[in-house]
Length: 433
Image 1 (cartoon, rainbow, N blue to C red):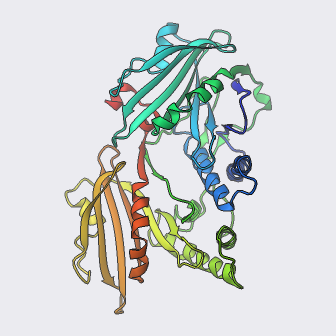
Image 2: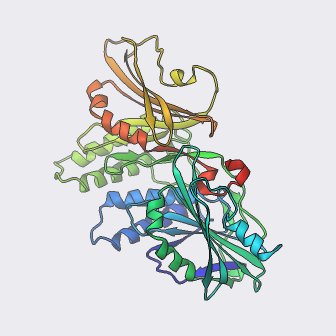
Image 3: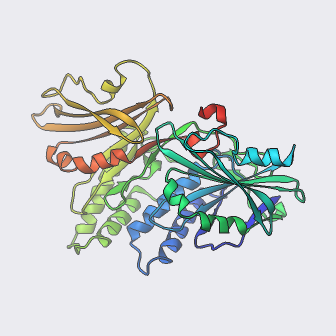
């Protein structure tokens, strides 16, 4: 098996496994590398920061295989506060004219509406002469995207090699081009005996990583939630994916263990010293949340707003749903015409850079069989490009709790994004036009 090797700094460039022998391996890898990366930057990193990075690493490890064509994935993890940038290496058999194939590999002749594709010769001591390109285009949501592409032909191994990354932060990537070029200079190809490799079975199915096959099961779109880990707590997907059913490939802690450990983490990172029973109280509260809230909106991702460990957590449910396509869909999602509301819901347009213009509604109803007021807050957007809608819901019998968190919830809404395959830069030119 042809393997792409590097002797770059392992504290900045991580080789991400694409397959796992056991479901727990993925989580162990994410936590171990998050711990290592943070300790290289701070002597006493906050446990909450380490966990936030572990979540990002796990999301990459779960989301990339089977979705993006790649035989190997390297993560550029320069800053543990940022989501690592993924670089995708793909090896295909040599075919056709060298120059034409390498230009195709670096997208030299694809549409680049912002400015012409910048193509240069890129030569390394180990891989020889190849091509390097920078390409800019607008995503379907209007964001400026930038892809950085490398390609080489190896007659020795009979393959064409490409290395690619895509970023929605062109300024950041442009400021680190020298470091990426150094990484590309460090690469070489090696023929590895597969007898010494790991099992090729992946939770998504069998994915062969030799140069004769590409990963399969490409997804069309997915929801990206970039939340502030200092105030938002993500409930593990194994309890939200099917409202209580086990989720293959995720962590195997019990709800009780998760609630107790999270309560300890939250108090450990707070400036205030917990009093007697405070950690246990928060643990019981979080346990009640994770037992109750996933079944309220099954299949939704669940975040808890917890700015201070003495607060009552406020649940936020978020999901991307199939687009119905009827005229009143957006108003229906936000319950704009709720007949049981105490007063007409307050409905207004709400626009974000990524999702466009949607609706936000605030409505007051009475809890069934009581005179107690319940406040509900909903956000919704429609995306014809993705054929999906995005819905975010929260509510509480304590109206002040929702109103006090309104600004933070709005910030979270601005951090939602529907990702499309063309965000990764692998759609062909006709699909992107």
